[in-house]
Image (cartoon, rainbow, N blue to C red; front, side, top):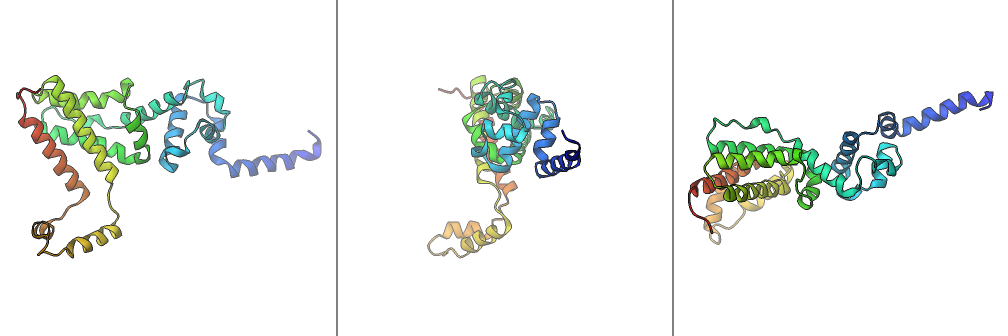
Length: 235
């Protein structure tokens, strides 16, 4: 480098670093599996599943995309790792074996819901790529264990876990309605003609459905149905 270029070169490097802070920061970190998966999940959280590609991930990390393959051999492995990251974020400590089965089921369902809400954009990945790694399967083991502790047989406990998990995913997919949209819906529902829809109008007149209440009501209904069927032979 020539003597007269030192200051201009340093300024140019600073300008480039300021315009690409995420890339520069990532490039300074040792490339590790945790960093790759965390960056991929953050990209999905921010821009959705369609934004995720190995090329884009390499750009986010500030590395050649081929460097990612050293830690994750293909995109399937990356997607499995994202599922693992979301599932591993579920707070398993909420479970208290001393509580009634219905409360344990509700607590596990809420913990799953909270993890999904934190990564709602990753839902398509979780739906298409189920948990296959040990870390991803621990929440599954917990819920199956709760149902087994409650007296369900192995097959029914597994089926019950799938039903509850599907209900949680469905609720998260519906999501919470923002305040303005909720007011619009409320106005429409309240305007329903009581002479044409008497039962619906009657229910809406006393209903105060929040997302939390709706969620808890559904999970409790499932839990009570599963627990009521304990000891009943299944086909």
